[in-house]
Length: 195
Image 1 (cartoon, rainbow, N blue to C red):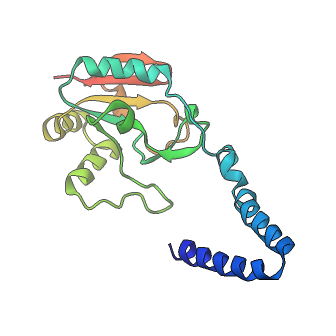
Image 2 (tube, helix red, strand yellow; image 1 turned 135 degrees about the horizontal axis):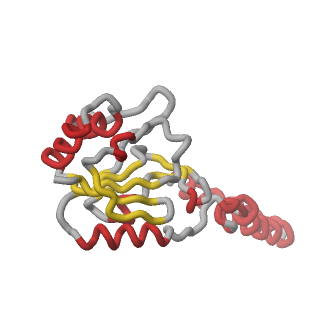
């Protein structure tokens, strides 16, 4: 804000000074003032060197959403369990997890930063418990699913395959008999917790 105010005042003072000196110098000064923002903002005009661009969600996500929208009851756990993801449809650009924005308010997605040694910064005890339900490979799956369903109201689990092979969390519980695969699309699976 200070830059805008004081730069404006400075430009007015300089232009008033130059007006009295020479019309040619004043006209050159005004030309430079209009050219400078264009020169320094050239990356902005092209979408920050193509770093910002619109992308469409995959059709398979829309199909999975239609399956979930048929049953409005219960929450939906979204995997991979990371706050930031490098998604194939987004040209592998690392972005915040878009699941809640696409699938709606029923989605429970990770808040875990996963930055070096920092994995979790949450103080919410419920979230910490849910986090351990997702990442603990030694937990009994029957207990895991019961807890997900009863304590968190989770009825469905959505898993996308964009991070398969590079994810540091193994979701072995997805292969358990306590889950039923209700939809499989290109790079996305929807499971229902039985019972």
